[in-house]
Length: 322
Ligand code: UDP
Image (cartoon, rainbow, N blue to C red; front, side, top):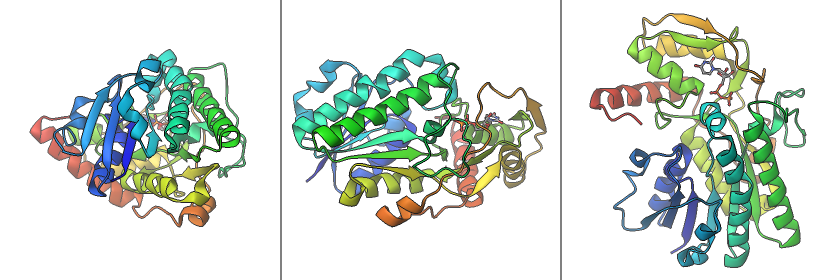
Protein backbone atom coordinates (compact mmCIF):
# COMPACT_ATOMS: atom_id res chain seq x y z
CA UNK A 1 0.00 0.00 0.00
CA UNK A 2 1.40 3.39 -1.01
CA UNK A 3 1.49 6.32 1.38
CA UNK A 4 0.63 9.80 0.15
CA UNK A 5 1.27 12.92 2.17
CA UNK A 6 -1.11 15.80 1.44
CA UNK A 7 -0.22 19.22 2.83
CA UNK A 8 -3.23 21.50 3.09
CA UNK A 9 -5.47 18.47 3.63
CA UNK A 10 -8.08 20.57 5.47
CA UNK A 11 -8.30 22.92 2.51
CA UNK A 12 -10.63 22.86 -0.43
CA UNK A 13 -8.41 21.05 -2.94
CA UNK A 14 -6.49 19.04 -0.35
CA UNK A 15 -9.59 17.46 1.17
CA UNK A 16 -10.98 16.53 -2.26
CA UNK A 17 -7.64 15.02 -3.21
CA UNK A 18 -7.40 13.03 0.04
CA UNK A 19 -10.85 11.53 -0.60
CA UNK A 20 -9.79 10.41 -4.09
CA UNK A 21 -6.51 8.95 -2.83
CA UNK A 22 -8.29 6.96 -0.12
CA UNK A 23 -10.73 5.66 -2.73
CA UNK A 24 -7.75 4.41 -4.73
CA UNK A 25 -6.40 2.44 -1.77
CA UNK A 26 -3.73 4.84 -0.54
CA UNK A 27 -2.68 5.36 3.04
CA UNK A 28 -3.05 9.14 3.41
CA UNK A 29 -1.34 11.44 5.89
CA UNK A 30 -2.97 14.86 5.87
CA UNK A 31 -1.13 17.88 7.25
CA UNK A 32 -2.68 21.27 7.89
CA UNK A 33 -2.19 24.09 10.39
CA UNK A 34 -5.91 24.96 10.09
CA UNK A 35 -5.16 28.60 9.26
CA UNK A 36 -7.54 28.73 6.30
CA UNK A 37 -8.46 25.03 6.11
CA UNK A 38 -11.43 23.88 8.17
CA UNK A 39 -12.30 20.97 10.46
CA UNK A 40 -15.47 20.58 8.38
CA UNK A 41 -13.38 19.65 5.33
CA UNK A 42 -11.82 16.88 7.44
CA UNK A 43 -15.13 15.49 8.64
CA UNK A 44 -15.38 12.99 5.78
CA UNK A 45 -11.76 11.93 6.29
CA UNK A 46 -11.24 11.68 10.04
CA UNK A 47 -12.24 8.28 11.29
CA UNK A 48 -11.30 6.57 8.02
CA UNK A 49 -8.91 3.75 8.73
CA UNK A 50 -6.24 4.72 6.21
CA UNK A 51 -6.33 8.45 7.00
CA UNK A 52 -4.24 10.18 9.63
CA UNK A 53 -4.32 13.90 10.32
CA UNK A 54 -1.43 15.92 11.71
CA UNK A 55 -1.97 19.50 12.75
CA UNK A 56 1.30 21.27 12.12
CA UNK A 57 2.89 24.07 10.15
CA UNK A 58 4.99 22.78 7.25
CA UNK A 59 7.12 25.93 7.38
CA UNK A 60 8.41 24.83 10.79
CA UNK A 61 11.10 22.16 10.89
CA UNK A 62 9.34 20.24 13.70
CA UNK A 63 6.88 19.24 11.07
CA UNK A 64 9.66 17.81 8.92
CA UNK A 65 11.04 15.74 11.78
CA UNK A 66 7.89 13.75 12.37
CA UNK A 67 9.24 10.23 11.92
CA UNK A 68 6.22 8.76 10.19
CA UNK A 69 6.54 11.18 7.27
CA UNK A 70 9.74 9.43 6.23
CA UNK A 71 7.60 6.58 4.89
CA UNK A 72 5.84 8.77 2.31
CA UNK A 73 6.00 7.58 -1.31
CA UNK A 74 4.23 10.60 -2.75
CA UNK A 75 3.96 14.18 -1.48
CA UNK A 76 1.27 16.56 -2.69
CA UNK A 77 2.22 20.01 -1.46
CA UNK A 78 -0.97 22.09 -1.52
CA UNK A 79 -0.72 24.02 1.74
CA UNK A 80 -1.16 27.76 1.26
CA UNK A 81 -3.88 30.33 1.53
CA UNK A 82 -5.20 30.66 -2.03
CA UNK A 83 -8.05 33.17 -1.95
CA UNK A 84 -6.97 36.82 -2.37
CA UNK A 85 -9.07 37.62 0.70
CA UNK A 86 -7.09 35.25 2.92
CA UNK A 87 -3.61 35.57 1.49
CA UNK A 88 -3.87 39.32 1.85
CA UNK A 89 -4.96 38.85 5.45
CA UNK A 90 -2.02 36.49 6.14
CA UNK A 91 0.78 37.62 3.78
CA UNK A 92 3.73 36.38 5.86
CA UNK A 93 2.22 32.97 6.59
CA UNK A 94 1.44 32.63 2.87
CA UNK A 95 5.01 33.48 1.91
CA UNK A 96 6.33 31.02 4.51
CA UNK A 97 4.10 28.16 3.33
CA UNK A 98 5.16 28.58 -0.29
CA UNK A 99 8.87 29.14 0.28
CA UNK A 100 10.15 27.52 3.49
CA UNK A 101 7.21 25.10 3.45
CA UNK A 102 8.04 24.03 -0.10
CA UNK A 103 11.73 23.72 0.77
CA UNK A 104 10.87 21.51 3.76
CA UNK A 105 8.61 19.27 1.69
CA UNK A 106 11.24 18.95 -1.05
CA UNK A 107 13.85 18.02 1.54
CA UNK A 108 11.47 15.44 2.93
CA UNK A 109 10.93 14.07 -0.59
CA UNK A 110 14.70 13.86 -1.12
CA UNK A 111 15.27 11.99 2.14
CA UNK A 112 12.26 9.72 1.75
CA UNK A 113 12.92 9.01 -1.95
CA UNK A 114 9.40 10.31 -2.66
CA UNK A 115 7.86 11.99 -5.69
CA UNK A 116 6.44 15.48 -5.17
CA UNK A 117 3.71 17.52 -6.86
CA UNK A 118 3.82 21.22 -6.02
CA UNK A 119 0.70 23.23 -6.63
CA UNK A 120 1.71 26.54 -8.14
CA UNK A 121 -0.77 28.90 -9.69
CA UNK A 122 -1.88 30.78 -12.77
CA UNK A 123 -0.97 33.84 -10.66
CA UNK A 124 2.62 33.03 -11.66
CA UNK A 125 1.62 34.83 -14.90
CA UNK A 126 0.41 37.92 -12.99
CA UNK A 127 -1.59 40.28 -15.19
CA UNK A 128 -0.59 38.53 -18.42
CA UNK A 129 0.49 40.35 -21.57
CA UNK A 130 0.39 37.07 -23.52
CA UNK A 131 -3.01 35.48 -24.01
CA UNK A 132 -3.81 32.62 -23.58
CA UNK A 133 -0.95 31.60 -21.28
CA UNK A 134 1.43 28.75 -22.23
CA UNK A 135 3.89 27.45 -19.62
CA UNK A 136 6.83 29.18 -21.40
CA UNK A 137 5.32 32.61 -20.77
CA UNK A 138 7.30 34.21 -17.94
CA UNK A 139 4.58 36.44 -16.61
CA UNK A 140 3.92 40.03 -15.66
CA UNK A 141 3.91 40.07 -11.88
CA UNK A 142 3.97 43.11 -9.61
CA UNK A 143 6.33 42.68 -6.64
CA UNK A 144 4.91 45.82 -5.02
CA UNK A 145 1.26 45.21 -4.47
CA UNK A 146 -1.34 43.29 -2.47
CA UNK A 147 -1.14 40.13 -4.61
CA UNK A 148 2.67 39.91 -4.53
CA UNK A 149 2.83 37.85 -1.32
CA UNK A 150 1.01 35.03 -3.11
CA UNK A 151 2.22 35.40 -6.69
CA UNK A 152 5.89 35.88 -5.91
CA UNK A 153 6.05 33.26 -3.16
CA UNK A 154 4.44 30.68 -5.46
CA UNK A 155 7.03 31.60 -8.08
CA UNK A 156 9.86 31.21 -5.57
CA UNK A 157 8.35 27.83 -4.63
CA UNK A 158 8.81 26.85 -8.28
CA UNK A 159 12.48 27.87 -8.02
CA UNK A 160 12.98 25.53 -5.04
CA UNK A 161 11.39 22.77 -7.12
CA UNK A 162 13.75 23.50 -10.00
CA UNK A 163 16.78 23.24 -7.71
CA UNK A 164 15.67 19.95 -6.16
CA UNK A 165 14.84 18.49 -9.57
CA UNK A 166 18.24 19.47 -11.01
CA UNK A 167 20.61 19.17 -8.05
CA UNK A 168 19.13 16.13 -6.38
CA UNK A 169 17.09 14.51 -9.17
CA UNK A 170 13.97 14.52 -6.99
CA UNK A 171 10.99 13.67 -9.24
CA UNK A 172 9.26 17.02 -8.88
CA UNK A 173 6.25 18.12 -10.89
CA UNK A 174 4.78 21.64 -10.82
CA UNK A 175 1.07 22.23 -11.50
CA UNK A 176 0.07 25.80 -12.33
CA UNK A 177 -3.55 25.65 -11.27
CA UNK A 178 -6.11 28.03 -12.76
CA UNK A 179 -9.33 29.00 -10.95
CA UNK A 180 -10.88 25.85 -9.47
CA UNK A 181 -14.29 25.61 -7.83
CA UNK A 182 -17.08 23.47 -6.42
CA UNK A 183 -19.38 23.65 -3.43
CA UNK A 184 -16.42 22.78 -1.18
CA UNK A 185 -15.11 26.37 -1.28
CA UNK A 186 -15.72 28.19 1.98
CA UNK A 187 -18.87 30.29 1.80
CA UNK A 188 -16.78 33.21 3.09
CA UNK A 189 -13.88 32.36 0.78
CA UNK A 190 -14.37 35.62 -1.11
CA UNK A 191 -13.67 34.14 -4.51
CA UNK A 192 -15.96 34.77 -7.39
CA UNK A 193 -17.82 31.45 -7.70
CA UNK A 194 -18.51 31.01 -3.98
CA UNK A 195 -19.55 34.67 -3.66
CA UNK A 196 -21.89 34.60 -6.66
CA UNK A 197 -23.47 31.24 -5.80
CA UNK A 198 -24.19 32.09 -2.16
CA UNK A 199 -25.38 35.58 -3.11
CA UNK A 200 -27.70 34.15 -5.78
CA UNK A 201 -29.29 31.51 -3.57
CA UNK A 202 -29.69 33.87 -0.62
CA UNK A 203 -31.23 36.57 -2.84
CA UNK A 204 -28.41 39.02 -2.02
CA UNK A 205 -26.92 41.37 -4.62
CA UNK A 206 -24.41 39.66 -6.92
CA UNK A 207 -21.26 41.77 -6.62
CA UNK A 208 -19.33 42.19 -9.86
CA UNK A 209 -16.00 43.96 -9.35
CA UNK A 210 -15.12 46.60 -11.96
CA UNK A 211 -17.05 46.41 -15.23
CA UNK A 212 -16.98 42.60 -15.12
CA UNK A 213 -15.24 42.38 -18.48
CA UNK A 214 -12.14 40.79 -16.96
CA UNK A 215 -11.97 37.08 -17.78
CA UNK A 216 -11.22 33.85 -15.97
CA UNK A 217 -11.30 30.15 -16.92
CA UNK A 218 -12.95 27.90 -14.37
CA UNK A 219 -12.11 24.27 -13.72
CA UNK A 220 -14.34 21.95 -11.71
CA UNK A 221 -12.54 20.45 -8.72
CA UNK A 222 -12.84 16.82 -9.90
CA UNK A 223 -10.99 17.68 -13.11
CA UNK A 224 -8.23 19.48 -11.20
CA UNK A 225 -7.77 16.62 -8.72
CA UNK A 226 -7.62 14.10 -11.58
CA UNK A 227 -4.87 16.16 -13.22
CA UNK A 228 -2.83 16.30 -10.00
CA UNK A 229 -3.00 12.51 -9.59
CA UNK A 230 -2.00 11.96 -13.21
CA UNK A 231 0.95 14.30 -12.72
CA UNK A 232 2.11 12.28 -9.74
CA UNK A 233 1.68 9.06 -11.68
CA UNK A 234 3.35 9.96 -14.97
CA UNK A 235 7.15 9.89 -15.09
CA UNK A 236 7.12 12.07 -18.20
CA UNK A 237 5.78 14.90 -16.00
CA UNK A 238 8.97 14.87 -13.88
CA UNK A 239 10.82 18.17 -13.87
CA UNK A 240 7.96 19.82 -15.77
CA UNK A 241 5.65 22.75 -15.15
CA UNK A 242 2.14 21.99 -16.44
CA UNK A 243 -0.91 24.25 -16.65
CA UNK A 244 -3.98 22.68 -15.04
CA UNK A 245 -7.15 24.52 -15.93
CA UNK A 246 -10.15 24.68 -18.19
CA UNK A 247 -9.35 26.53 -21.41
CA UNK A 248 -12.89 27.90 -21.83
CA UNK A 249 -12.84 31.58 -20.87
CA UNK A 250 -15.69 33.68 -19.46
CA UNK A 251 -16.07 37.30 -18.47
CA UNK A 252 -16.92 37.74 -14.81
CA UNK A 253 -20.14 39.51 -15.84
CA UNK A 254 -21.19 36.48 -17.92
CA UNK A 255 -20.51 34.23 -14.92
CA UNK A 256 -22.75 36.48 -12.78
CA UNK A 257 -25.56 36.22 -15.35
CA UNK A 258 -25.08 32.45 -15.68
CA UNK A 259 -25.22 31.89 -11.91
CA UNK A 260 -28.27 34.16 -11.66
CA UNK A 261 -30.07 32.16 -14.38
CA UNK A 262 -29.07 28.68 -13.21
CA UNK A 263 -30.07 29.47 -9.61
CA UNK A 264 -33.36 31.00 -10.79
CA UNK A 265 -32.36 33.92 -8.59
CA UNK A 266 -34.08 37.25 -7.98
CA UNK A 267 -30.72 38.83 -7.00
CA UNK A 268 -29.68 42.02 -8.75
CA UNK A 269 -26.24 42.29 -10.34
CA UNK A 270 -24.39 45.27 -8.85
CA UNK A 271 -20.96 46.72 -9.63
CA UNK A 272 -18.25 47.34 -7.02
CA UNK A 273 -14.71 48.69 -7.10
CA UNK A 274 -12.16 46.53 -8.95
CA UNK A 275 -9.41 45.34 -6.54
CA UNK A 276 -5.87 46.58 -7.21
CA UNK A 277 -3.79 44.50 -9.66
CA UNK A 278 -6.77 42.32 -10.61
CA UNK A 279 -5.61 40.39 -13.72
CA UNK A 280 -7.59 41.41 -16.83
CA UNK A 281 -7.49 38.06 -18.59
CA UNK A 282 -6.64 34.48 -17.71
CA UNK A 283 -6.88 31.36 -19.81
CA UNK A 284 -4.54 28.35 -19.90
CA UNK A 285 -2.97 26.70 -22.90
CA UNK A 286 -3.33 23.02 -21.96
CA UNK A 287 -1.50 21.35 -24.86
CA UNK A 288 1.21 20.16 -22.49
CA UNK A 289 -1.29 18.54 -20.10
CA UNK A 290 -2.96 16.86 -23.09
CA UNK A 291 0.38 15.59 -24.38
CA UNK A 292 2.07 14.51 -21.13
CA UNK A 293 -0.94 13.46 -19.08
CA UNK A 294 -3.61 12.67 -21.67
CA UNK A 295 -5.75 15.04 -19.57
CA UNK A 296 -8.36 17.59 -20.37
CA UNK A 297 -11.31 18.86 -18.35
CA UNK A 298 -14.57 16.97 -18.62
CA UNK A 299 -16.90 19.29 -16.71
CA UNK A 300 -18.05 22.52 -18.40
CA UNK A 301 -18.90 25.64 -16.41
CA UNK A 302 -22.66 25.28 -16.76
CA UNK A 303 -22.65 21.65 -15.59
CA UNK A 304 -20.22 22.42 -12.77
CA UNK A 305 -22.26 25.40 -11.62
CA UNK A 306 -25.46 23.34 -11.57
CA UNK A 307 -23.78 20.83 -9.23
CA UNK A 308 -22.28 23.64 -7.14
CA UNK A 309 -25.58 25.49 -6.77
CA UNK A 310 -27.47 22.31 -5.82
CA UNK A 311 -24.83 21.33 -3.24
CA UNK A 312 -24.65 24.85 -1.74
CA UNK A 313 -28.45 24.86 -1.40
CA UNK A 314 -28.27 21.56 0.51
CA UNK A 315 -25.51 22.93 2.75
CA UNK A 316 -27.49 26.08 3.49
CA UNK A 317 -30.61 24.06 4.29
CA UNK A 318 -28.64 21.80 6.66
CA UNK A 319 -26.92 24.80 8.27
CA UNK A 320 -23.51 23.14 7.79
CA UNK A 321 -21.73 25.75 5.71
CA UNK A 322 -18.13 25.17 4.73
N1 UDP B 1 -14.81 39.02 -8.44
C1 UDP B 1 -16.04 39.68 -8.57
N2 UDP B 1 -16.92 39.61 -7.55
C2 UDP B 1 -16.68 38.92 -6.40
C3 UDP B 1 -15.45 38.23 -6.27
C4 UDP B 1 -14.53 38.31 -7.30
O1 UDP B 1 -16.31 40.32 -9.60
O2 UDP B 1 -17.56 38.91 -5.52
C5 UDP B 1 -13.86 39.08 -9.56
C6 UDP B 1 -12.43 39.46 -9.19
O3 UDP B 1 -12.27 40.86 -9.16
C7 UDP B 1 -11.66 38.80 -10.31
C8 UDP B 1 -12.46 37.53 -10.61
O4 UDP B 1 -13.76 37.78 -10.09
O5 UDP B 1 -11.63 39.60 -11.46
C9 UDP B 1 -11.89 36.29 -9.98
O6 UDP B 1 -11.62 36.58 -8.62
P1 UDP B 1 -11.23 35.49 -7.55
O7 UDP B 1 -11.00 36.21 -6.26
O8 UDP B 1 -12.21 34.39 -7.57
O9 UDP B 1 -9.87 34.84 -8.05
P2 UDP B 1 -8.57 35.41 -8.78
O10 UDP B 1 -8.62 34.78 -10.11
O11 UDP B 1 -8.65 36.92 -8.88
O12 UDP B 1 -7.46 34.96 -7.93
